[in-house]
Image (cartoon, rainbow, N blue to C red; front, side):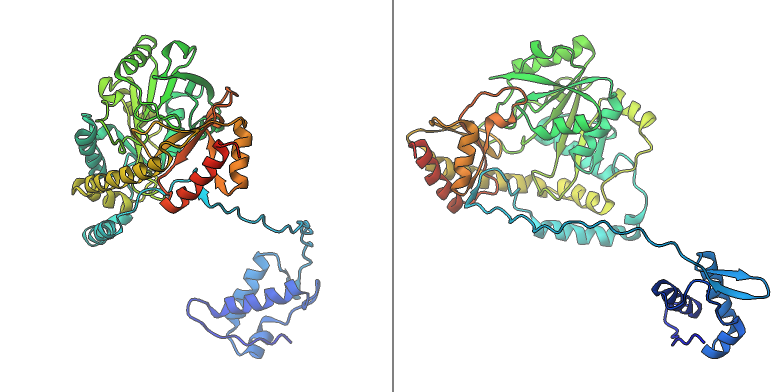
Length: 453
């Protein structure tokens, strides 16, 4: 006779407790295939429970294939198929994490304004309550889109209709939306050299991607060939630091107008310009040919996955017709908080404070390199990185390995080219998360290598 100690627990009906006990005995082999179970009445009396409890447990076990019922005979344990053998996965020790005395490749992002942000979050929670659980407009909440439009007007001189703004969780998501919106059959041109992840996103979406060669003024319009869409970062190109002048921007806009083509303006690092004012956004020069994109991940924190794009009115109409089924990918709690952070002036104060902080850090770091033989600093005007050129006979690959062997992680400018294989002897230094003490150690290594060591 089956004997179990059944206890009634909150949220666990008595029949389910019995079901679990019998199921465990079947799986463990204590109840063998073909074995007959006690009658429902006998088992109920033995366990001192109601007959309906046993009936419910048997019914569930039968429904799941653990028991079979024979009319007027009783319940029998069903033979279960043996589970497939688990593949033997070789146990390998995890590779030890690499440690560096200085990492010139990884930015730490801005110092997050926790005090202001948490205060606004509390206000949002108290003011909106259960409304935060309701479905969201697929373009993002109106409050945030209005705040972004006002920010763009103040900061970038752009007259933007909030109805043409689309909020999404990171630029990667927005890139994929654009590919679906514009079409995979188009040819997308990306800057060469450039941020390699953009090319990977287009490739993963099965979109044809070609190089957009650059010179000292940015992308060359005469080299765009059959491209239908140009993805460009004119405010501060990564990694070269080039700021595309107005004359070149106009030439690129003429290319787009003449061929009924599109320009995706990625306004990368536009908040952090130290010496002169930003040039007007290309979107403000032609709102019907330019798709403007930006993110708060760089200016606030990488984990704040809130990005947005401003679509031309015609494309927004197409989006609503073709892709309007997509839901907004940013939580309402974060959207309402960011809306207040923008509209109440916290973001402007934060950017001004961080611009001053990064200007001082950049000045300190570049001063360490100033006047050193065989070392030259390039592109110091904008953004959170600069270039360091070394006089060395080493190839770029050998240079990076030599630095790594001495505890300095670095990336060569030449590695950002898609086609060009020439050694440039230039390193890309992201200093946003680089402490002064770590950079002093890196400078000592750079001096050693530049001196022929």
